[in-house]
Image 1 (cartoon, rainbow, N blue to C red):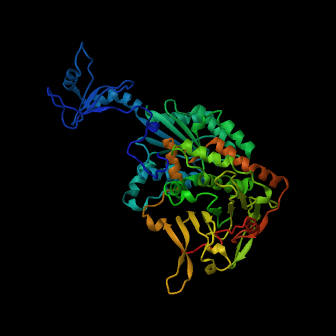
Image 2 (tube, rainbow, N blue to C red):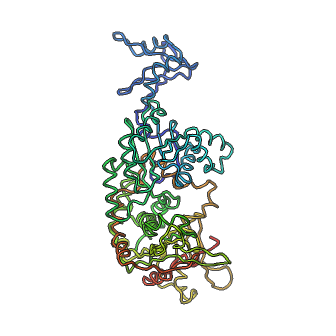
Image 3 (spheres, helix red, strand yellow):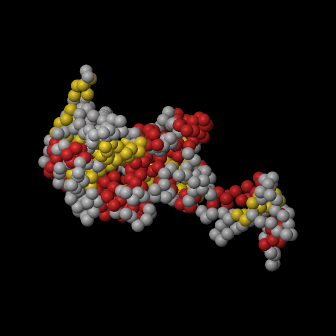
Length: 593
């Protein structure tokens, strides 16, 4: 898939999906005889096992006759046309050869009974089928320890499927067709025997075609290796590709991440491993490079000369809500900052790649990550939400969650200042902020530009020059938008200035529903496009930035600053920003934008 394409689903897939060589077709006529209209002539090419034949308009087929002496191609074709057999007979003779050169994609969702599979993976696969993005031959298998029949899986999956708003008329029919392609196999994640049985079932559905297999590991990280080993040794493709999608977290620190990568590479090559970060599939993150590299007005400004600071903000208006046991093992820094926000930062700050090839883009991201200073403890603020009563409703604190230890110091909020030591970004603070149980839900990138030197209108803004700062805001979610804050004269006889927005609001501009991030990433994995997946050296560079400060926080048992559920977060985050002469841009978020 092209590096900056959206959900573009061509009618024919690339050879990376279908595996075999393209079949050649010849449509011609000879002065000595005529080929009926709509006849297709198959000509055997080197390395192709298809038999030579003419498929007639009525469904009959000319079978192959061995050449005698120096018989010309035209003479052979003429005799072939005289020996027509039924289509059924042709299928019996040539069907196996055709299957061997066709291809199928088998998608196995490992951990099919979990929330991620039910809420994200199966709906994304249906959306791809609904849009015509999946290949002609595909099968979906759910694999988990739970005992379940095919019918029970289909019933479970059907409850989470939705259709595109603009194609509702055939929704039920499409759902039925999709669910008929879904099957279930129960087994243990560490059982090669169970995966071998899965392999047998997959082969039944593949029907002798070139088999391409995609395994999505929607399971806890502590069983990644066992499942990968079993899938690789007992259920990998024998004549096509095998790929494995691995969900975060990719370890807890540099050491555990390296161990995970080493273990995965015992059974897979690097190009078979697709480490998924669903934030990279978000529409506005996908558009980030397009905005920068295809618009002349932005790229010249994209440096320390014009940009004062960059803010990457992630906030949720709810707490752990039953996920406390998982979350307490990782915390907000590992869960959000080290992957989602850092990946966005790398895309934002990278140099222009030499092409849109996946490796060229990922090379530039790695250069950014390796140019960054390791995070220091004094440049980090952590917090944890506490119980709060508002409007007669009491909201629980983090440690009120029954799955969380009462003495937990795990941060549910973190703010950090990072720096890139290269010529483009030297001295520009990149501020990250991520938290749970805050006053709103949003993810955005805010680019604050420098003040205008010698601004003639400074007096019109009073003493707060930040009010006159241009700011580019890329709102990733919800209600996707890109807007630029500019200074503008208010209509009238006087000279009164106002701050206005040049606004691209996606819901108002585009009628088409924005695809879910998992749809784009699953399609990319099927097509072998790795641009939005994380390479092992990227992962190493990312962990090297955060591992020292994470270790220091845990060794020194730093107590987080407590903040009320539903507030803006710890006050310490504002002091951190002020140290670098920065004001968080989301403090006065415009409700109308």
